[in-house]
Length: 433
Ligand code: ADP
Ligand code: ZN
Image (tube, rainbow, N blue to C red; front, side, top):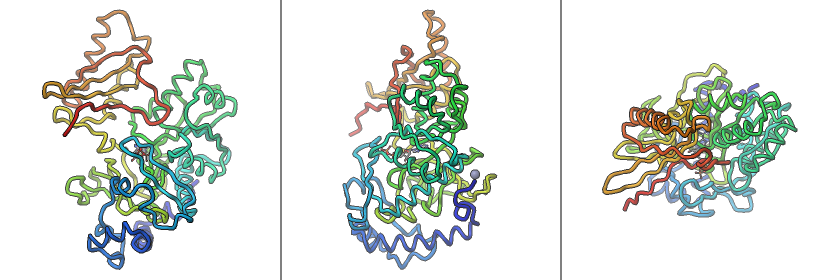
């Protein structure tokens, strides 16, 4: 079942050897072939000869998203453009898009990473995988596609959107695994229910969900509604795309494919490594990506790393669920608010749908904190008292978890925009000069 037993199951000492060896090579490559990295390392007073073991990684300067924007589009490439055989760009959830280029080796390594994820989900050549991540510049569709081909399963390349057709094909073809964002999976499950398509008419057994934060409560909901085991898959454009890591059958943390992508957790303020197991910002160094190597790239994603061996037999480090990006975190009336907190609270209530939109503004020097929510049609009653009671319970629950009182607005069923890709769950209207 394990795709690459050697790399996924080696001892920590061996892994550190492999990582040290690869780090030396990639730093030398970046320094000699990318004017950006040469200048960065020179300014920082580090030379490739200073990198001997994986521990020396802390000597390297960080790379940030702004570096990619400043060098748009091709300024970080470390090979001639004639060796770049694919370009992708981030979906631009935050700010201007950034561009990445891949050599043939890079694409091979990336598909190997995705193949490891899919194998960890128990998928193989008898599976039919419907890829409802968007195809195009976004890495989700084509990234998953290459991994499915690599394990020899059947690709159904539907891309995102056109939900009615997706549902039709899912039934007709007997799709066994669905790959899409958890928000799209939720939307699709609702549409299936509306269309009266019951689970016994589907052959779905695995959900390949990622590209945005989602909670454990959301997992339970999706597993129930779609009759699948729902697995988390993680990645980001700068580091390759989806498949930097994923859960295994234990569903107890996301294994990072550490021979390809070296993870660190730092304190986002001091930029120093945190104590093992502590939460902080995830940083990646690509150990085997040549077109556009990333040295100590700050992801802005907040999580933890756990080096204990997993019950599945893999030794690759496990990452905790991503709480959200530091960019997603809003400070409202001095308190940190993550959209994922609202998601898990809503799912505690049988009356509410898991769709919501947070809007924050500043009026008379005070932050407003509005949350639009929908109640399920069967709870959407004309009895105003009933709605007031439901609303009050949600308000108190959010206040007790987050520490500030939200203004809950119950809107008509189906008002909040459904997403076929990454959901937009918060809008900050405040202007910070
Ligand atoms: P964009 O930055 O435009 O959204 P990407 O598609 O590269 O473009 O997004 C990568 C980001 O998506 C990650 O840094 C992370 O914040 C989020 N992400 C991806 N997979 C997951 C996941 N499984 N869980 C939580 N967040 C995820
Ligand atoms: Zn495992």
